[in-house]
Length: 222
Image 1 (cartoon, rainbow, N blue to C red):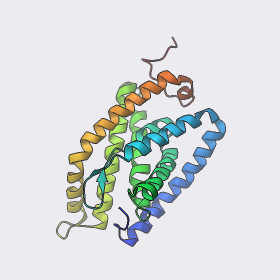
Image 2: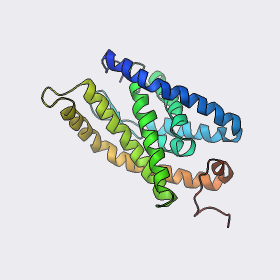
Image 3: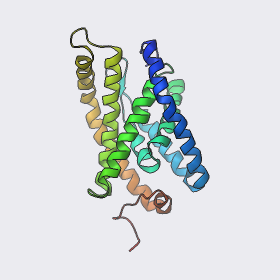
Image 4: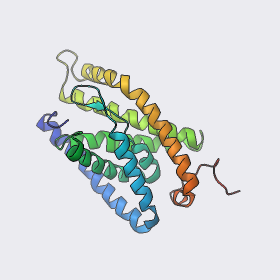
């Protein structure tokens, strides 16, 4: 939440997140220039992340549990572009919904907009040829969500180490409390992301093929 992190960590997470956002903006401009037909899907990915990440459940003091919705964008457009979408989503939520904050924006971007999408992207690409499309999407979205909260737990542990046991003890405590709500939420997010892909692949298969995303089970090609 706003004002929760000490100033040194506010600056640190902003500094760490900024290069990813700059690169993501460059990638986003390139995609929109080369594939203008992808703009509706970019809007869908951003809206999906906004809606899911707005469904918040109170968790650790100073934070909350919620789906992230970034797995879809990471699989579709890659983690760099998804980091920009996440930054926009988190900024709007901070300003309009009082979720997160401006001082904690850098930390939230790093966990939800950078780490989560990178994990989802690499898991999807590692599994899609050996486990099938649906399992790859489900696993990627689920683990991307969980990776966000592992990162958030670590961020909180760095800012507030336990008097006994330090950062590691604090990390175990934060991640343990998050797990109560986040594990089921991550599984639900994986299922919802998988179903969204199946629906949109049937609706707009040509747009997905541009980015080499195709569910062989729903393909009409021989």
